[in-house]
Image (cartoon, rainbow, N blue to C red; front, side, top):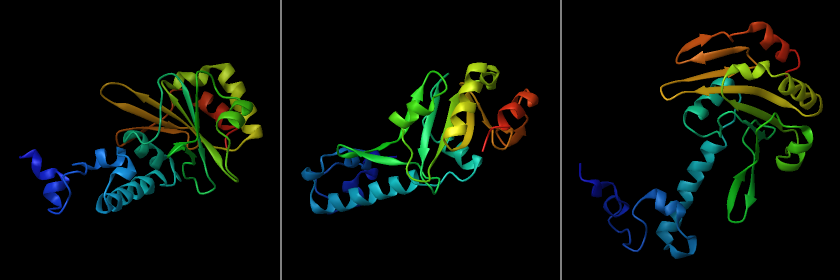
Length: 202
């Protein structure tokens, strides 16, 4: 297939040759360098991206979908704590000319003081916490103690574990107390350990 048929010039015959030829370049272009048609299309593209980013994370299945599509940050063997607003939408703040997701990445389970400083919650918000790695992290007593301390001071909607390999990924939710691999629901390897954590979960 001729790659030129997917250019904006081909799709829109009146598209100026001075404008970017694809949506990615259009989104990354200097706004003031665009003509009125390009600015209008860029705004629609931005609105589309933001509408997906604002998709509320009401259930673990929604979180899993966003993780699979790389719309939620996850780091290998690290904790990522994401601020959600009162509607369970990801919370963004303006940073220069762009929007920045309010989140905090840490090697150890985060403390209330760290989150208050680096990822403060909006009013009536809550945290979504994601660990990138094995469920064996639940065996770590320091993480468990830090989790207990955090949840007594700040609202946590769920704690997720995303264990990804080159060929597959296991997804676990502490709130529902079960994991998922493909379309199959799978129990946590250590149910007593999970219940120990869930005792303090929201």
